Length: 372
Image 1 (cartoon, rainbow, N blue to C red):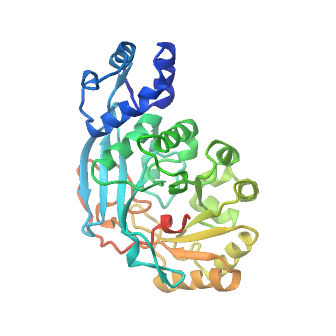
Image 2 (image 1 turned 90 degrees about the vertical axis):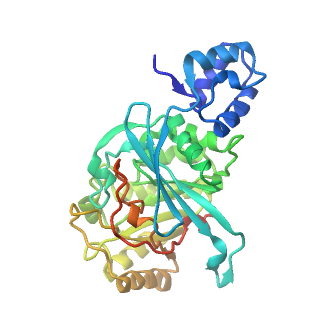
């Protein structure tokens, strides 16, 4: 029988309940595993005998292992290659920031150094976005909630993690139940992350968006929109055919009315495809009734497989100026981190060799700076 991750909270809770073990023993078990990932269950002191029986026969402290951790030349990005129990690999990326280096509304930002972890929710992805390397892998399998949480455990042993973004491999809302359970674990002891510091990115799975606020109130929602009209979305994001733009925007309006939170709009800039002034005006009109922050993302090349080119800096800035000036939409430009280790947005695809591609990385604009 395959042993399960002890961070599979629902299964662990159910097994403890059926064996008469109090749930309050779960956080100290997790805390011990975080500090001692290679531990034996007998190393944990003062558990009821029934708890040891459940743990030894049903669960492993960690079902995944850290295969490699590759630092980028920018010295602020680390890509983790994590091997799962089934032999598959996923990637997660640690991004380090110092908020004192930037300004907000013309004033210095408070705080200091902190780290954001970009997490994967699936092995591969079935969405097939043509500008994304992960989509070229196809879909392999969903991660369990424990496998999602274990990415945070691996990263936390490298540096303290303040923020989590589900922007890695996979479509998080296509693995909905595991996502919700994993996020709930991350907000419990001993992790104790705030929901306000967790962001889930989706291409727009309408039926899941309709449930998200009730299940995870306070969570940040980011939507990979990438085009202001349905025709262009379908050209670059095949999944858009199943989730038409009109239905998506209606779902987002309901979500915002219920949550009272800003929605983050991710928009990858593709030269000659979606980056013209006309597209900026179309996007501004589409978002006119929403409280949003638009994050413009320069396209990251993905080897020789891509049919797209990166928009010029001039086009990106003109696009931003239109959204800000004509539509009063807060708009940021995401400058990239970790391109030299294929750890930037859209570049996550399993590379067991760990070889780097010679692309420089820039200072980032962190979406988490604008979540609160």
